[in-house]
Amino acid sequence: MIKASLHFMSQRNTVDRQSNQYKTQVLNSSIRKLTARYQLS
Image (tube, rainbow, N blue to C red; front, side):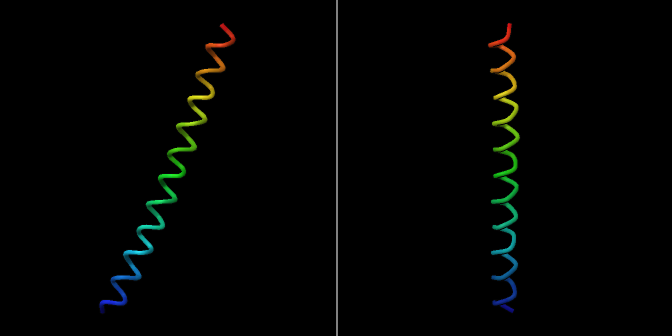
């Protein structure tokens, strides 16, 4: 029982880490687009 919940917790941590990386990538790309737009104008 404890092993199963530990495994579940580690899986959730991995998913959280992946979604955080995805959010960071999206943020970075939108920031890059914004700065590029400002540099053009």
